[in-house]
Image (tube, rainbow, N blue to C red; front, side, top):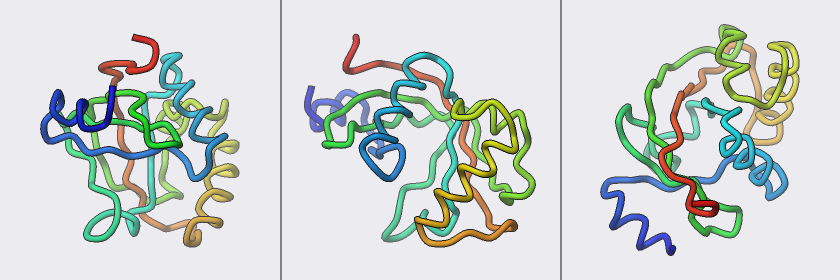
Length: 138
């Protein structure tokens, strides 16, 4: 299925990739497919005009493979703006990438440092979602 096919099947959908490199994107897509990843976050500074589209509760969006091929359709179920230092263990564990809040903080600090900068009080767009369709595995 092409991205255009997906966009006609899911009108109003935005498309995005998880992560900032192929290996991370592949890992995160696998975690969503396994049901382990039901949340994601990004720096608030990266959203808005010229950046990523803000997630919207109820909107179904298309997660892409690193090469741009449609991979998954997710539906946003909750969005909050939260400072990095205020992210809860519940949210961190819902991201599915770590088994502790400390691990989440360490890995996400590293991610943000290589993607525009990090500060403990930086604001994050924290999104919870559910998997609607796996476009690769049916």
